[in-house]
Image 1 (cartoon, rainbow, N blue to C red):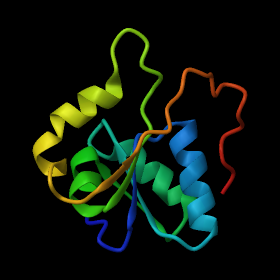
Image 2 (image 1 turned 120 degrees about the vertical axis):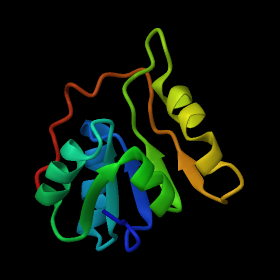
Image 3 (image 1 turned 60 degrees about the horizontal axis):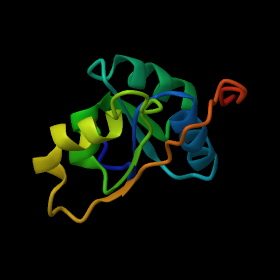
Image 4 (image 1 turned 135 degrees about the horizontal axis):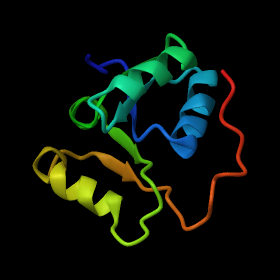
Length: 116
């Protein structure tokens, strides 16, 4: 699935990414969600967010979106953000993309999931 109309991409479909995507969709800004399972979870989440949301794989988001929120799990022993950047280095390098890493060491367990 192409996300050509979605200038804001999300790598990861957890509470943080979906909360930010939800706010953008409510503001009329299209989004493209990407999930590590090839896009199955992202597509299901996008359907819940409405017509301004699309789902796909991480690669779809990287290739199709100029602004990327990399919303992966809290690093712990290994850093999934660094692993993602390494895996997609060629597609990201020199393309003028804006990458935002909103991850932090705090738990989002207390945050309610976004309610479309």
